[in-house]
Length: 303
Image (cartoon, rainbow, N blue to C red; front, side):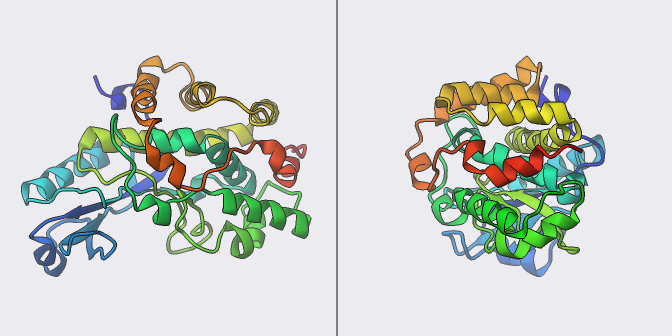
């Protein structure tokens, strides 16, 4: 029994994956791609045969999961593989979040648990690729800019997505190379939030586990904002400093509730990956919600 049998994602939530890999057939696939995934040259990879397969918009349902499985099999059967320069980025449709409050929740939850999320972004024993220091660093800069923009613009409403547009250019943000990329929010061509820390993988179960992890984080960010009392409770939880072992427990309880079997997958990742030296190279700084009073004020405005 896999994680798919224990946890699912809302049917209205969309996602997409970017499969960075290498293979001798890279040029052949780019010139004449037989897949319904886009194939593009990826110059960021170490190998000259670097390629990126970009999925269409998908849902976490039987049809699209089967399509993903078949695509992974086809890619591997044509000799493609991953090395330690490959990333496995995962996008989620930002329209699911609906409003500024849900987006702020996603940012503050990600920031509070940033070290733990980075540690569990890869399969057990997987070491964060060195490229993350340049292409998937801490979101501490985003949080600083968002806090400053909310204070400057005197934004208090959190009920509509329009408010996020007011802080987008100055805050949400100037570049995409953070572990959580939110600069495409509101973009009519690519309205997504993107998780960039995971390493490249062509393993079906690992990829599904990553989709579930980050999709569940997006899901709970919206659920918290939808219930005001829950929002206040979570804000209080995120205002206290904790050791990493306590934070991972709180994080997994927050996004997986009573799904014990599912949580075990990520506990195992945490225990095996938390000693990764790369975690010290991503610019992470421990903060709590108390460091972002304007963000907290918006989230706690009675609605």
